[in-house]
Image (cartoon, rainbow, N blue to C red; front, top):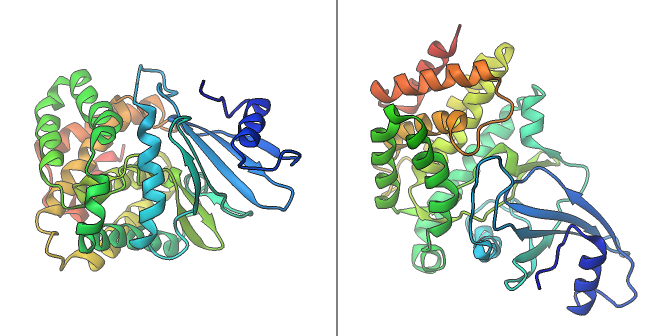
Length: 339
């Protein structure tokens, strides 16, 4: 029987029976909200240590039907083990234990006080140093994982969860709902399947980043796989561009930040043997994600109906006449998103 970690009594019983804690140890629990693919609980022990427990859901918490095998918790556990080898120090939480039968894991909680970076950005606090860290972190993951590919790639060759959690809900589903984009998205799906050159996070978003003592801590690694680094770039650039679309008074600052993010990433990877063709594919993945976040299974909740309509219109235009470089794409998006 699978324990419900959001039920405090069930979780306490499980932790005691599995000898993760002492029989008489008193704990405090708090359910964490925000994610759609996992149950997440913050646990505090009497000694002051704090754990985050995550349990993968078979059906995601979104309006459209969206299913994925909860055994994907194994991917996240492996990512917590191996990402510290390729990411900057103190950017990945420490794995404490995993239980594949219960589809859960525990990791060290990021200390307080911290902030969710998405919420910070939506409040208008756009920090140049954090944008630089955002680019450097991704460049390190991509570049160092390529260097360690013989050691790392065999662990992350399974792309099932990238297919069910990204390619199907973002590209395939969107192509079915927006027929004029179907050919572009079909070709991009194939490109993401062909260009398998680095570790790809697959969920590289401000939503999955905490800011602690001025540095970024990356969370939610259940889609890590060997794939095309251009997907991470398109996925993450979409968040900066969409927030610039939504926050009109800060639009110019977000567009500038997106260019700075790209330039930081490129400065750390542009001379790499695997980098050829990445920028062109990053442009296409950005356009596809801009559309998917209006019309896919997981639309951006902060965009108004009118903003979704406009972003969809711009993305469809860019599919027919897309720039060759990321800075040109950012500039064109900014120009066309204006009223």
